[in-house]
Structures are given as C-alpha cells and as structure tokens.
Amino acid sequence: MTDLQLVRCVTLLTQSKTYSIDGILYRYLYSNGTVKHTQYMFRPLPRQRKSADLQLNRDKVLRLVYEVPSLYNQHQATQTATAIQQSLF
Image 1 (cartoon, helix red, strand yellow):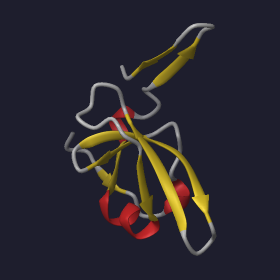
Image 2: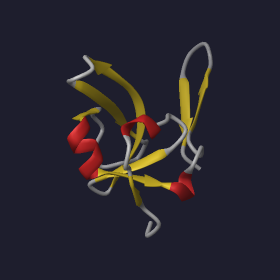
Image 3: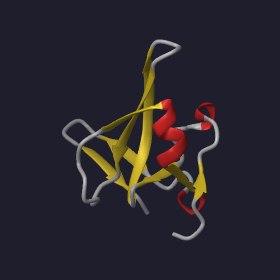
C-alpha cells in the first residue's frame, strides 16, 4: 500500500473509499456534531486488528487519515433476512 494519499479536505470523505489510519483499513461512516465541533466516524474493515469504530475530529482527520486509491469502491455489504455479509475484495 505505497499509494496512500493524505486526506486534504474533510468534505471529500465518502463511504465508497477505503482509508488507512495508523496502518488499519477503515471505511468512512458519517459525520455528526455541530459545525465547529464535527466528529467523523470510521469503521474498520473485516479482518483488521481493530474492531471498534473510530471517532475523529477535523484536525486528526487531516493529520492521520490516508486514502487508499487502489481499494476504491471494493468493499460491499449484502443484506439478507438473517445476516449481513461484507466483503473487501
């Protein structure tokens, strides 16, 4: 994963891209909070070392979050009546 690109603007975060934070792959979920104190939620992809959601403020997003362009729109979720199946590749 040498083709990492630092996120330069929080408005460019999308759910279809994959992001690397401290070497772990995450998917952007949503943002919440006020205009001055917005929090950005990320969820680790399956089979990563971390399993808890990550909440970052704007400054940390701009310093720690890298976009992985080679994994653009690769993770998918399929929902059935009994389970949700997610895949990365």
